[in-house]
Length: 191
Image 1 (tube, rainbow, N blue to C red):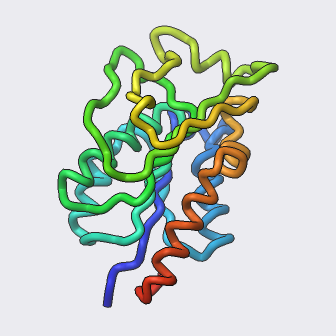
Image 2: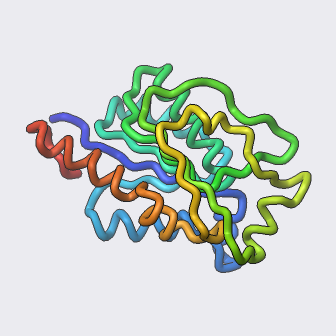
Image 3: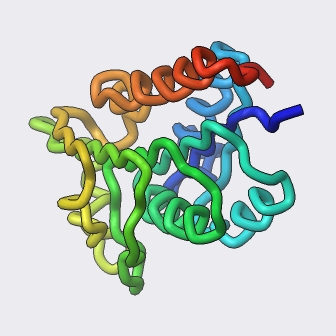
């Protein structure tokens, strides 16, 4: 039996602080999986090595879509680069308002996956937006080579509004199209 697809969601620096009411990517991934019935994996940032090992153990999963928010956007890019080097086909790389790591450099490399970058430029910044510019912990722009992305969308949204970035930025549409293409190819589409 062919392996089914997988959507990987990688949270940002504040995402693991769910006890503070954060955890926006974790919550989005759980809601997405429940709504669609598709396999979705949430990971905190800083765990690219673990994700690569898991992908290698499970074998190729088509479609594979990778979504990362904030610091997790840099991890998503790095995961896509490393997955493709390991022979895994990545259909979509979606980076949501990437923010640079503390004291670190942006990952290097190229991806053949369709890359959609969604950036936030809020007309009314809130605390989440101020945190994206708090040296040395975060910085915008992130340093990712977003000029290489096939699509760049700028939205008047605040940094933690992941649901609206996914919907208004076209990210959710990209995921739907990826799964629809699999369904119409005659391959099993469900988990």
